[in-house]
Image (cartoon, rainbow, N blue to C red):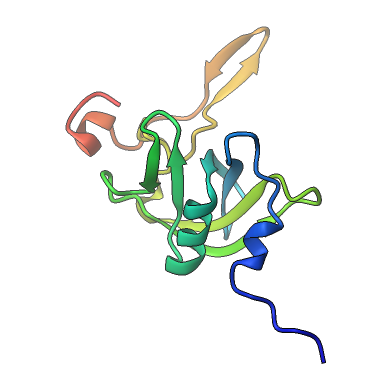
Length: 136
């Protein structure tokens, strides 16, 4: 019989960077579309696993950030995965409201390189001013 795994042991397997962070990719659980990339620290990843909703670490605010705390566009986490090196986390999510980006688009990856320049290829679903009451 093997020893039971302590609940925090899985967090020890993550290869945190020198700032104690790991990149986290949010992917639509149904379509497979990549929605966004954010960062997580140990507390964010633990909270995400515990609550079932995405919690990230905001580098600009230097604090935990619950996705949708201002916009209501919560990410319900269906799976948490890690890559082969344990240095990237993948969250398979259901995106509330269909908007993952603070610009009001479904995903943050809305610009495409076309003939040597970045072209916006995805429209705003709802303007940031309506979502946040200010320019996003």
